[in-house]
Image 1 (tube, rainbow, N blue to C red):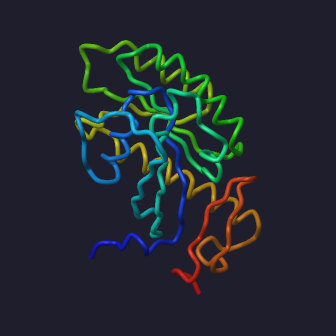
Image 2: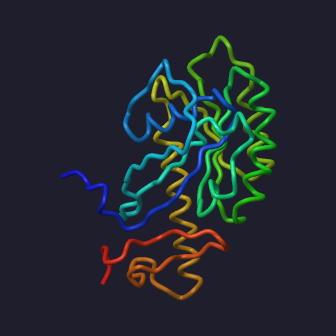
Length: 212
């Protein structure tokens, strides 16, 4: 039987950032609805979607925010990042400039979030092999240098999309569990409704759910 979208143990906010046109919206729709739109255009306004997944016998609901066109106007505000416990910084493997701009996105992200935020560098459009401009090795080296995760994806071919999001969610769960253990609590039996703070970042455990 499928998991109801309202039946979850943890709610984690993730943000998608990166240059316009790198495929953030299609990564979001592929992960949350298993859809891909070749004609997708930049959306203006706030856009987010959710999906619940099982991680270590717990149901984690991901609330994923998309910049929705704002990145073209440098209008992303601190409110967009507030409460985020994970981020995917997306570039297009066929456009070198989108990779060069990752450094700026990373700085902005770190300026607005807690040091414990889990970050995944995502090289999207990996299906366009004949147009590749950013070598995998270059991106791997960058991710190692900046202490982020790294994965290449194709929203079109549904390559590694689930893997990228689920790896981020799994690591956030591990961070939350470690923080809880450091406080001397049993991560499997948190007080109902408790908010677990990772510095200024919080991961909410749903009240009345799943623990005595």
